[in-house]
Image (tube, rainbow, N blue to C red):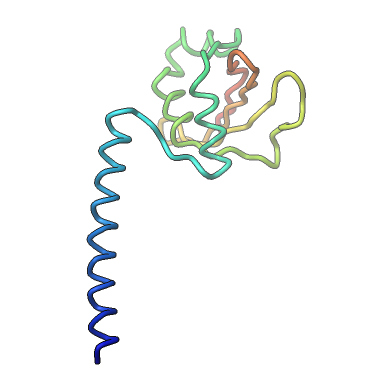
Length: 127
């Protein structure tokens, strides 16, 4: 019986500690704006978002015609899914990524070149 009592105290203390740790880390990440990205998709999108983004002529035309919005692009770079099968992650100096997502309820794929100093949005393919 003493073992079950000690196990109960241990589990109660552990659960209280986890709750405090979760609240502390959440508050700290909200204040500093840090993100915990462990998966390749998240790390790739975070790396692209951290650089200045420039647009190709095709994208500038779509932006001028109001067929594409910078908020749509920002949404892609936050919530999109990187297709590593189609992407060229070995090329130098710029890696090419294909990011799938939705624009105005339509499936679309962005083609982005991720260079050392900047990211270049080259193409949008709406399906």
